[in-house]
Length: 77
Image 1: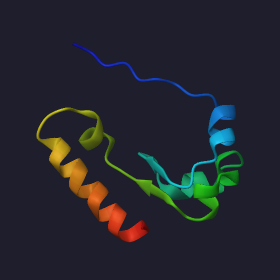
Image 2 (image 1 turned 30 degrees about the vertical axis):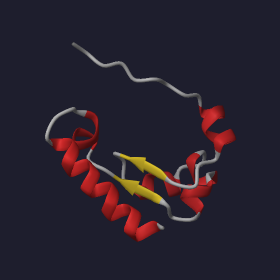
Image 3 (image 1 turned 45 degrees about the vertical axis):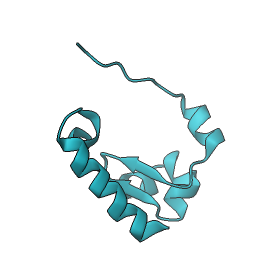
Image 4 (image 1 turned 90 degrees about the vertical axis):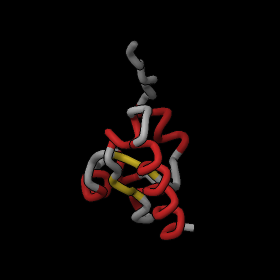
């Protein structure tokens, strides 16, 4: 049983211009990148690094993912 992930184009990301980004990359990568640096989330320093394994695998780790999101929510909202 495998999972497939959807893909979005760079144009779509730019059009949506997210206010917050969760990524496995360091936030500095987004802020320094010529493309991603234009996004509202990068300009406002609302890019957060997450452990992709915690978020992408079903099972007990999802509890940790929810705790991480709750902690992030307290910091950002």
